[in-house]
Amino acid sequence: MKLTGPLERVLRVLVADPAAPHYGYDLMKTTRLPSGTLYPMLARLQQEGLVESRWEDQRPDAGGRPPRKFYQLTAEGVRAARLELAAAAPAGRTRQVAARAVHGTAGSTL
Amino acid sequence: MTWTQPVLRIAERMISASCRRLPEDERAGYYKEWSAELPAILDDASVRLPILRAVRAFRYAAGAFTTTPYLRRVGRGALRSRTSGRRDGAVPVRLAVPGFRVTIGLFVWLVVFTAVSLGFPQPPGWPATFGLALAAGFDAFCIADIARRSQVRYLPKWAWVLICLAQTPGGGIAYLCLGRVSLARSASPSPAQQR
Image (cartoon, rainbow over all chains, first blue to last red; front, side, top):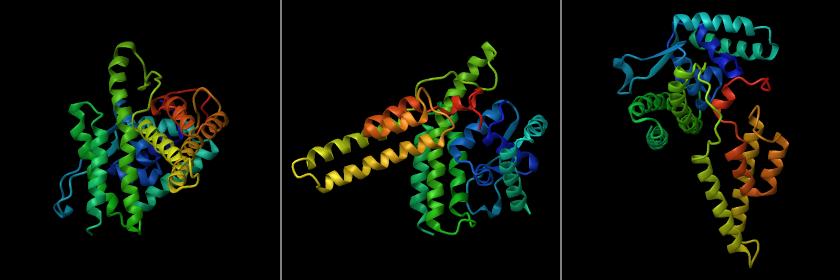
């Protein structure tokens, strides 16, 4: 797996809170990636068994909205992501970007 | 909140059109997933202006046109990689992302051509102005695309920019067909790719 800039951003957001449900649109916002970049990446990660997706349960307060799909790292994905991110950490520019991405998630979940 | 209805419907149409490129058994699932995100985008309270939310919904839906060709190729590549031992979803280089964009390019070319030939006897008529505006827009689109990418194929970036400017619709179409690096390609490892 090659750690490109966008991939790193996605992994940082996912690994910051591995138990939370990450919806496609929320991932786009926190990583600042367009859907045309994000979804191919999620598909690739899913194929490699690092990310899994599930449908949310229909909530009674959803107001007739269709259920959404969310993404989470698998156990193996968490391990792989931590390893890759630790290896990539010393790069200056990417670290700033990643810090912003992580900070973004932390802010939205608090 | 009636304004969301037409936006929602158009964006759903875009998603369904892009899902038609997928194998039949995958279509419904992806359509369901992506169209379920649209209400969330249109009700996103963190974006204050409704028009910006609508733009976001359209951009989200437009991304599906990039995603589905990738999914289709990876689907095929995955089968092959299991037998040949290829790793990490790397897909062989191929010479095409055309389809949607080339159709737009050809359409622009046709409009410019008719506009210029109609306006020719009395040069600055509205068709010519309209055509020129379209041509300028198309050039801007191509150049923005070149600038955005970390690498382009066959020629250096500045050469593609020159080509786009020199032969207005043709150069841009040539770039979109040949010079653009497809997603699958740019996702696979390459030593020249630094960023």
